[in-house]
Image 1 (cartoon, rainbow, N blue to C red):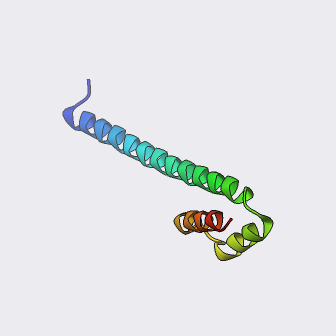
Image 2 (tube, helix red, strand yellow; image 1 turned 90 degrees about the vertical axis):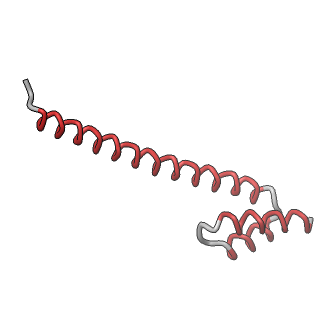
Image 3 (cartoon, helix red, strand yellow; image 1 turned 120 degrees about the vertical axis):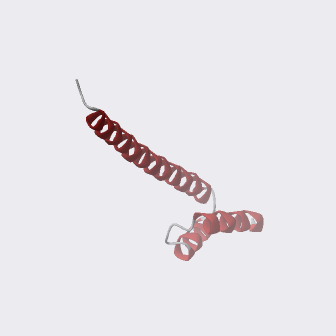
Length: 79
């Protein structure tokens, strides 16, 4: 039979475990969504002419997905 203090420590350890699990799952979901957005943008870039693709990749080398999305829309309107 466990004392109340031992039960409390077990419960706190369980809570901490689930909090760490939730945090890691949230981070994995964020990474998945980011990768999904990058793939979708790459598909949209691939549909553009080669000169537009080069210009967009040079202008947005990082992970500015919102800016890249807007730039893709502008390039599509030019065509």
